[in-house]
Length: 455
Image (cartoon, rainbow, N blue to C red; front, side, top):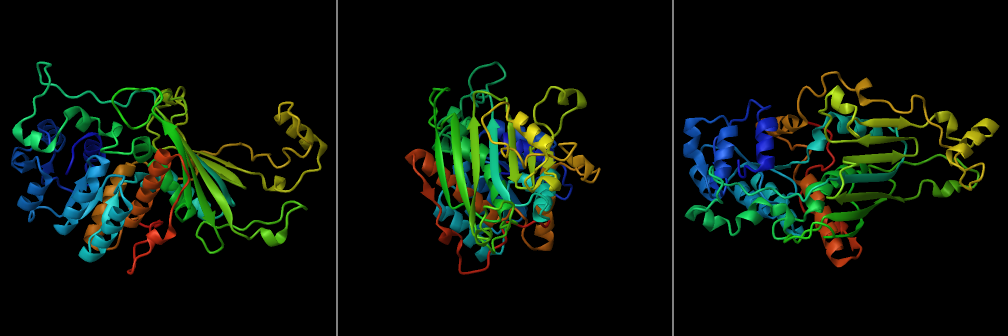
């Protein structure tokens, strides 16, 4: 383990604890309290104390014959060098998102995987979530028709700041010599998400989860991104913003994995144009001032909609007062996919517009199957969530180390998400539309499939 902060501990408690084939053989964290925290969660084994390090490079050297793989859970912009060093040491790598912070760094990691024969698995755990996997299968089976819009959001209420740990008597920690070599400022080290030196803030830590899902759903990367946002509320020493709005555009053409032709539904549609390329937009918002909408992503197609959320670990009592905790499926009634001439339906359509000035044709297609929503539990295996999604991704990690092949969140998946993050951060800083050059995905060797649905 390199890094035993919040995500490192999360993976130890859920993903690694749920994967008996993994043994934690060594820990590297540049502060003593991080090492101690990791050691406790790893089982407080006395012998493990001898395998705790400040500098991950020392760990790689001294433990080179003792470890098979490395899990990296450190600040975003430290990932690249660590990943490269671990691959050079001949180790398989699980790297928390986001994989790398420059276009060149992303490409270098893909090349290094090819050279070493190892892989990097990235922490995009929604691809191991049964709800998201089920949604993908529905989309690929054509249940939603053509995807026409994707909306995501992650809203929180708080300054996103973590208290700097103190000693048992409540006094500030004084870093020792080893810590001072690696950490310049303890507050910035603990609260790295708030500072551009270490991260891209809300974009790289929150939006990236939904962006990479959109890539997966569309079967390709976006072509361009526009971003707006800033630091408008929590005005302290941070230099990453507290609200952001993103707009990604996916240009979809015949032959693309996400392309769906449509049948003529209106006498005014030109049949020759129905099978032409089209654009799907992902809109995303993130903020730190109100948690009402929470976290979620809505997939909208011309035949149905699916709303997804990362977790559904809530009790029946909590569910009564918790917003958006269950996935939601809504499918359009096939009988209403053509214009209606039924006067009663036209009347109801007008009533749905709440008196707005629309023609009788305004809502002629908006009649839903009853019941309007269908819980995923009706279609999922009853034991789908007996295994944590985080454990599923680490079980995949082990499977591919032992049996070969690449995990579905491989280095190309990580690169695609990272490039979107880099472009969005550039768009935010320049207040302009940033185009993503498709040449960035081209290599002179075969690369793994970034849209894999397998193990």
